[in-house]
Image (cartoon, rainbow, N blue to C red):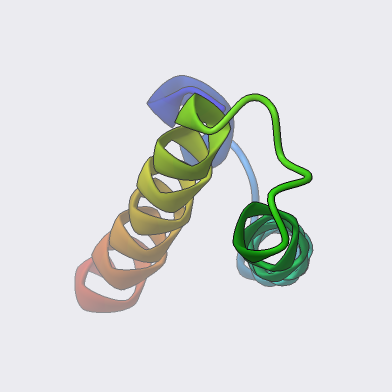
Length: 64
C-alpha cells in the first residue's frame, strides 16, 4: 500500500490492516521455511508495508 492510502485511513482501519499484513508475513515465513514460497521478494514488500503502517500510526498519535 502507498503512504497516501494509509494516511487516509483511521486508527481502527490501520490496526486491522496491520493485523492482516502480520498474519500474511507469518504465513509467508512458514512457506519460505518449508521451501514452498516461490516469490521470495514479497517478504520484503510485506515488511516494508508493515513499517509504513506503524509509521503512520505513530504520526497520528504524536500529531493528535
